[in-house]
Image 1 (cartoon, rainbow, N blue to C red):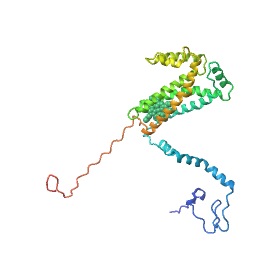
Image 2: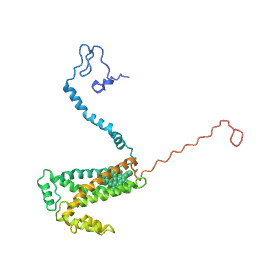
Image 3: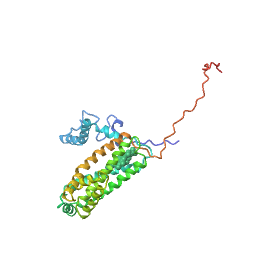
Image 4: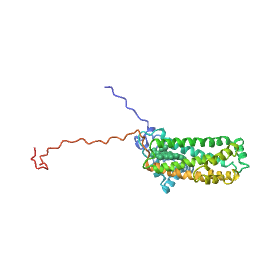
Length: 302
Ligand code: HEM
């Protein structure tokens, strides 16, 4: 049989601890420790080099400092490396997609708040200013406006997924209830945000919305009075909607998303309903050993 040529793996791709030491007297490869330390000591690092090394290690050092004090890496490992059942698919990404939509709304909302004036006389003008004069203002406003519809669509799809996959059942009922509250809060965000441009469409849409709330049983009239913040929709309504849209509801949503995700990690993900559990393995009966021991009924061994 012909002898196969031996492949020499270049030293550059072998990690240093696994490299063969150079033959005595042979010139050491560039970058390695010199073979004869007496005649050629390793070059001393300059202050600049040391500073550069420290700068390179700085991000890892900061993370280690925070981790030592918070134990965050344990939490993140548990969260990111948790086991998920077989058969999970794209439908399982709808919750994360909703979360992403919320984050986009929060970030774009912060930038809009820098230029928006919540006053009945200036709100419309400030939105026009954002759209026409502020750099990238129209883009950020557009992202926020269309993003609200995207979030509402995604939250319904996510709810549909959890419903049809039976994820509302024991032990995840509480997470479902938290989800329902999140749905109501998301709709509240969409409703209160709609008034903020204070143009004809948003004004009359809010009048209709508040009146619809007023038709609810028992609490309905109180709710519509609370939302209107006065006998007619006006400046006080705008201030109230702004406070609900900017402070009250986002804070509650953030807290509830935290609880929602904590429960998702703690309880694990529901397996798809079409996935049947493996049948338990039945032990194969073993023929009784003829050990020559007398049976329990006193019969003589065969
Ligand atoms: C701001 C809104 C929401 C966010 C950010 C959110 C986020 C998430 C995420 C990331 C997951 C894990 C991944 C997944 O299964 O998709 C999840 C799971 C879950 N969500 Fe939501 N969710 C929201 C609203 C809702 C709503 C409205 C409901 C139902 C009424 C709901 C019920 C559930 C349930 C029951 C689970 C557990 C799913 C399972 O075990 O398979 N969530 N959510």
